[in-house]
Image (cartoon, rainbow, N blue to C red; front, side):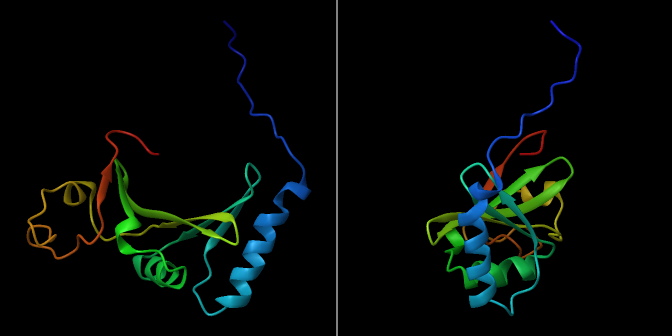
Length: 136
């Protein structure tokens, strides 16, 4: 057993990001009026990770990308909650996440009534994918 820290090995080249860059360029050209997100290009598979900092911005992106509400997951961890979904755009996976939700992990995990409304707060619109104890 070693006590040396393990450093992940970078693989691939800048050329491997071509499809992700082209997809991001396409999104910018076709949806230029959407709120500016935090974007990460992922070299393994050439994916585009789009992160928004408000539920409103997330919803604008979700609608523009034509992602059905039923495909959105609500992730819960000890420090908070976020929304996540994905869609293929021009053959490239676009991961969309929304942060800054105005609910606590406890509210997110509350039992929902048949109308899909959390007790006292009409917030729950998305299916819940709770993860106990840690970030995903």
